[in-house]
Length: 124
Image (cartoon, rainbow, N blue to C red; front, side, top):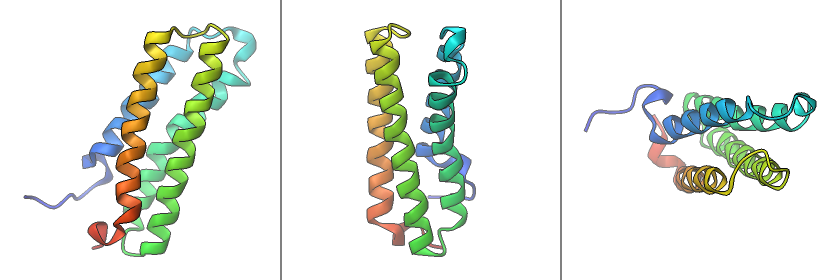
């Protein structure tokens, strides 16, 4: 099996990028008065996951730094889930989209937990 050379090859990165883009497209329909609050928050937290995955991948030779960045990813993913709960409660997204995104984020968090628990598997 070929060794992963870039963060873009990681399934968790690909999933996080997909979720970030789904949220970006979905949030375009949020009310204008949410531009500097909910819209901005959900976009930033969802994009932060993939950014932190990229940073973690580059820090994988330092297990403590790697774990720290993976923890940041988990936190940002969980924060994204909270903003999606608000979007659902406010009627900005429907139940079906909420469930789909929450399931994708749960899968992503599961992958991140596996990475965090076995940092040695990612070391150079």
